[in-house]
Image (cartoon, rainbow, N blue to C red; front, side, top):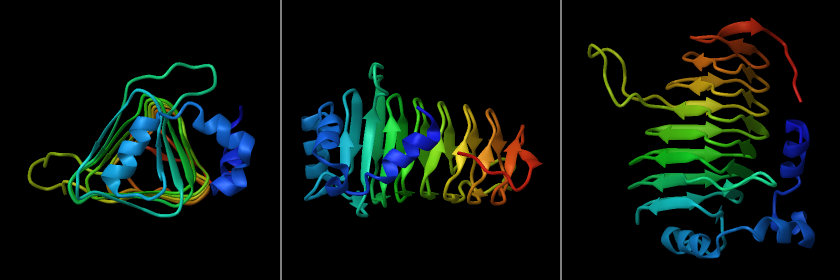
Length: 226
């Protein structure tokens, strides 16, 4: 399935009313009911904002909160594929805000550390994504994230006493992040941008720009993708 078609399907799933009975059944059939109920209980949600699939290890601190009116599908496998061990952690005083339907596929490692804020819109992240949030990470609407991408807003170390430990990351709307790319602290990625496979993004990316390389630089401007 193409990224454009998958994103179009997700954009139609802004609420369970819009999904329809047949699609609800296909989505919920593989959800881990005990893990999803545990998430609801631990996060004090009256409706399941986080739908947890098999092989996801979840840790929710009692002070962590979930907001927004969307749905996070956590650890979903592609059709015909197996589930892989995954991890999702919301630590003390952290928050998750879900503003659309966002799918994080199996093999993920997501950690929102103490005081961190993770905000997701709509779209998907393919297998083996790593997100480490120490301060604030915002992912916009209709975002496509390929396999083995790392998004990390903190270094956990200071070099020569000069670099800040963390800096917020903002990923705009309709952004495509390619295979094995790395997004580092303090970066803002504009709407419609494309991050090439293997790129290491250490500075802001303008809207509709294609960037690649280590560190990433602008390869082309005014690009479109679907």
